[in-house]
Image (cartoon, rainbow, N blue to C red):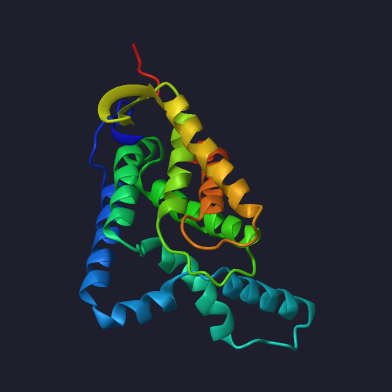
Length: 240
């Protein structure tokens, strides 16, 4: 299912959401123009769950034994990749899919939160998604990149804010391509169900072996459902 348009956004181009899309695109242009240096740079900026687990263990050990202070680089660098990995993408299809979803669903969510709250929410959702990913595969050494965890948080908030919205969707049926409007509640329930099912199947084989970080999507979506309503601006009543 490929979304083309939603019915809930009062305007399509909102400042914070547009800035996020522009930032992701700018970083991707940097990736593809870095040539030989890109692989090394991405390896240092991608989130590796085992390294994040190691940083968390170092912090816990320091709290238990204050005299044992680990090198700052051992803690700050792995935790910093949680943020930097949100702006990295592995291919044109990877960033195209993520930015399409952010473009379709982000504007409406920003309209309910306001630009500042929306930005804070977006990055918090990305962090929550990363934590969920690390929790499900704490020893994984597979680099994780992409904005999909944060975008999943946006989808979770949209699910709560606009369940009656309608999503114009391209739906391939065998050799035919059909465009239909699907209620947002149905579209997002199907999307979440696919992520959860894939995560359970993949999780049954052990640590993440690469590809899609399904549990990051699940964690981000649930975070968006829970936290999104707390950040919504109150609707002002019109005076007669």
